[in-house]
Length: 303
Image (cartoon, rainbow, N blue to C red):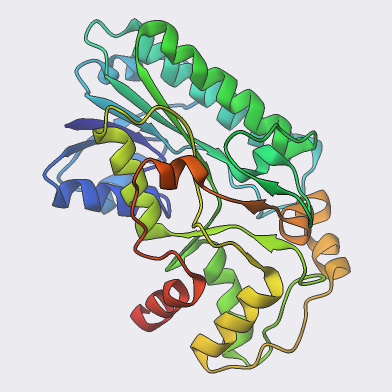
């Protein structure tokens, strides 16, 4: 398959490209940063684009068999100023709108769009359990996810199969885990906030395999949670990380410190949600890392 990919130079996208090549598919990279993409993928077709704007780049979608849309401004790296919130929303809502526009206009259309969303769709809770049938929350991230998914849904009007994957926290050599490892390495690790908040995670290898399943299995359609089947509370996650690293997990990071750093954005980490991938497991998808300890052991020992 020839697969157009946005967000291909990122933590998830770069691994996806390598797996597709191993499986003898043909990735085509849509990127804002041609220099970085060329450095990472010197032998691949690279198309420069502005995600939120229509343009000649959209013509490159024609002739592709599938599209994977991973693009979006990072959520947890800066304070959520009004400008930052607008960038988070626009990169997802408008970025997906332009991808759908390109697919709809293509004389030879892709057969499938795999579009990212996030478990932030459900809102946050220490007590509720969510699956793909649960209603949306009403906070900022839930509203972003609803707007994001609504744009993706429009591709069905062009007769294209749609798979929406709601990602949990992705664990691998990079991403969120890279920010958590240094304190543990310095014997200063511990749970963030109360430790009672749920941590819905997935190993990057499982997520990449799920994306490839979504591309290649015609019976997969609709929303699937991109999370492992065994979420854990933050305290258990950090205790397990300490065990795997042979380090203590005793020094909690107070929520007020994270709020001082990230403001409203701290809510993502401090409140969390328990998300189960019921449709994903029912589809027959097999996880290599269904439990957090083997997942963390694989990542830490491979570093």
